[in-house]
Length: 65
Image 1 (cartoon, rainbow, N blue to C red):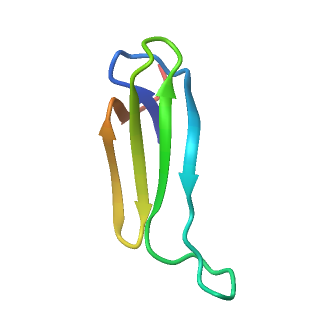
Image 2 (cartoon, helix red, strand yellow; image 1 turned 60 degrees about the horizontal axis):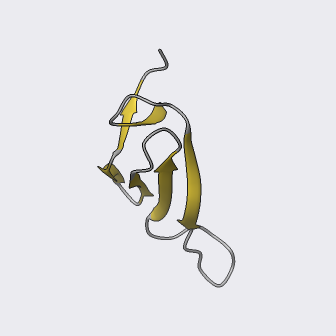
């Protein structure tokens, strides 16, 4: 899977991320990554884990061009 911006640009940069862990360092819940498109400046998120796999804002999935 490839993340890209709705404007079509593949040049998105991660600006923030949350990877929840339990006391023993194991992943729990859903991770959240926030991205900014370097072409248009819009932002969006990718949420995954714990049965969730979705994008919001300008971030979408697609195959490389």
